[in-house]
Image (cartoon, rainbow, N blue to C red; front, side, top):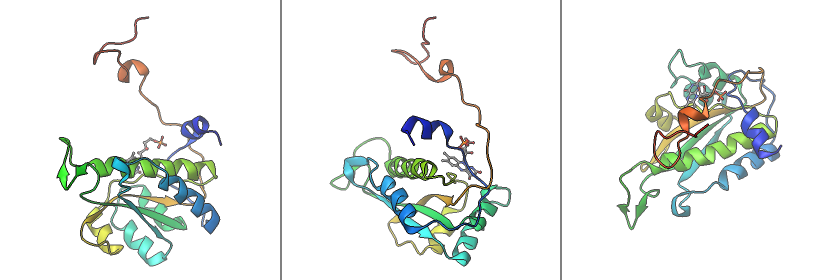
Amino acid sequence: MEVLEAIKTRRSIRKYKTTPVDDKTLGLILEAARWAPSWGNTQCWRFVVVSDDDIKSRLADTLNATNPVRDAMRQAPLVIVACAELGESGYKGGELVTDKDEWFMFDVALAMQNLILAAHSLGLGTVHTGLFDAKKAADIVELPQGYCVVEMTPLGYPDQVRDPRPRKEFSEIVFYNRFGVKASS
Ligand SMILES: Cc1cc2nc3c(=O)[nH]c(=O)nc-3n(C[C@H](O)[C@H](O)[C@H](O)COP(=O)(O)O)c2cc1C
């Protein structure tokens, strides 16, 4: 699938078939994540691929009861837990070098968006999931000290077709030369 088409046709998928994802397909998807750019090429991301039903179910329980991804995590054959090694992204010689201390979030997001678009191009569904207890999820996947869980996604074949969600108009989000200056018509 062509990149712009993948970007425009991807949807957040919250219902999954139980059809397994084969290792070759999973490998292609993880490869897309691996090729994301990162701060100083530090590649702080780590991915835990969860297929164990008990672990998936415990991860699902870290989501609030009203989070629609909760059931999806149990349905989908796989859950990807995206983690970050801390103290790498945004640091030089052990020192923070900008006013922001969370560049690891940015790097993991780039990798996960690559993963999600690659999955979509291969007919698979995903949904970025951020509303959950990340500390509990870290315990469940036995994350060592110095790492944190950033986000999760179910990964599997979609069992729903979704209409696009609305997007803001360019006039609300794009400015020229100075913030707030819109295109002249
Ligand atoms: C960082 C992030 C966290 C998100 N967390 C959740 C979540 O916890 N539960 C959920 O149902 N959707 C979650 N979403 C999905 C958004 O609701 C979804 O991307 C948005 O409504 C646009 O829909 P679309 O992805 O189908 O274009 C999250 C998306 C992002 C980018």
